[in-house]
Amino acid sequence: MDSTPYTTELPETVEEAGEVDVTAVFAPVSALPETEPPHDCPLCPRLVAVREQLRIEFPTWWNAPVPAFGDPAAWLGIIGLAPGKHGANRTGRAFTGDYAGQFLFETLGRFGLATGTYGAKAEDGLGLDGAIILNAVKCLPPENKPTPEEIRTCRPFLETQADAVPTARVFVALGHIAHQSAVKMLGGRLPKARFAHGAEHVMPDGRILIDSFHCSRYNVNTGVLTAEMFDAVFERALALRGTV
Image (cartoon, rainbow, N blue to C red; front, side, top):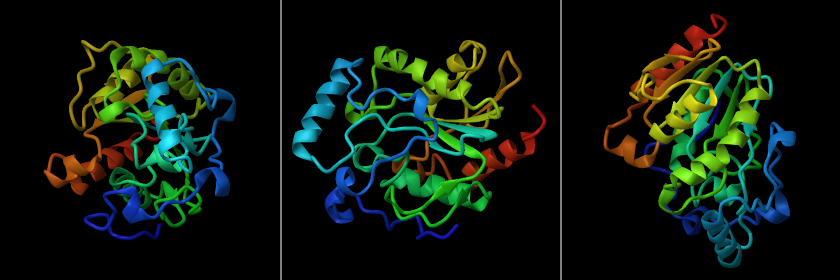
């Protein structure tokens, strides 16, 4: 997969990136269209308020629940936390438009799980092969911190989407909150399945969850997560493919 280096070159703000009218030029298409919440999902009042304010402030952004992205026949499910303000909430595609996406898609490309050229926008032609990205929370939470109630409210969408991809037997959770939602979604028990980077958890039906620190700019810049550490997670996922 071709892309620009991900170490320092991504814009910090949408003003640097250049604003694209997502509502006019591109309507994100879900990999699992029958499983998505409505565009104006009303279930979480705090997230609805954020969405409505951003629709006034940035009317060309996506500003709606972000759909599943990737291969509907995937063997690997990647569970993220929630859309980033200048990333998926702006572009309408999971992990697209911010640093975390650049780091993630670079990694997936090295393992043959991403095709095309990542251009930090939903219409760049990037695709996933064998992988699908789902989020624990589909709408932008303030300061990237959903409340426990918001996480619980959105979990049925995560569960429905995971069930819609029965070929996915290996999952990677990006961060602690994604781990918690993934364990519950897969029928596991949190006291037994504790989060740790690289930890593996066998779920009751045999599906396997692998934990990773989130690929955020902060984690990468501070050395909490390195490219080698992230590669090791996907190397292990590939090793488990076809064994569960």
